Length: 462
Image (cartoon, rainbow, N blue to C red):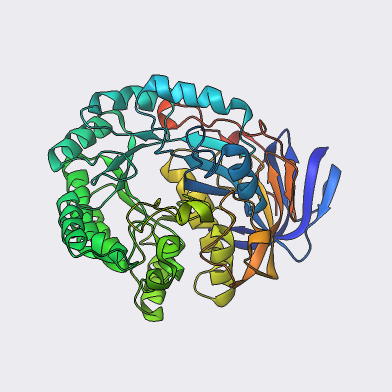
């Protein structure tokens, strides 16, 4: 007897779609079958897509340092409502630099997260010797900046090389925010001397050359050291191609992008100012540029998509000049819907959605096959999606503390209608049923705590 049967839906994985029933036992996927099986609880998923719970590998919940912007109870509620069952969090306002700080944050969050979560650590100037301890303590990744941003110091090429050597020595993963410090600093000095304070300073300050130079250097150093490196929030096809070139030469590099680089135009900052202040900024100058970026996602040169959820409230976005207000956009509520909308429009397949927002990030960060998949043995994290559900993005439809979205007013096609976390109904329509504390800490691969052995469980039956 199974605990739960999700029956009659279309199961979507990166390898295809099939009509199948999904059965759950003890919080794990136990069986995918073409035949109905005995189950204590049955859910009719007719007309719905049954997808793995999404894994958002780039969120900033600001907890405990700046909870007015976002916190774990609220951010993970928004995640579950949107079909995200696992988040990887990095808070720049309260950086994690040592194993002790990682443990302190894990303990603090023990009863605050509604969704399962991993934690990133920060690479700090002169602290490359902390990498091994952080990795063994369960950090999902170590994050480095090549330019000083959010109060986190940028690393010089020499410091980045030392960091990558430490990363390679223990097999860790390093996520890199790549913008070249001297170029952004020179642009800032010039713009400030000119008295500029309009929205256009953002793409001029954080220019495309700065990103491309930093990506070229970062991926080269990854090849030279053998360090596993992820390029964070790649903004345009040129950046993706730079990373792809080094990958073809043997660099163990992966590429992340975010919905803002697939949907927003560079010129929007002229109208919306601080509400389009994020970095790297939007690069697309036309709809053709956006389609080119979608092509990179469709072709697989972009490995995965993440929200880079870095919210501020409207009041915070207005509290100062364009130079002073926080970088960042809210995105946890809307990332899966944006991807579903793209699938509805034919830009990518639903299979690719399951890959870039579930399986691929789980693989990159060592959570697969526990997370990101519906194969037997995995955690029973399921999202039931109505692909034909049309809805307008409005503040009333969002749960993040930010209370706004750069996609406000857009009509999107496709939405999660039920989310299960380890076999328990965590969200249904606009109701979040999961309580703070439901979520479990997921240690990274260095701690050896994320793997399961699906082949030891019941197999798929057709």
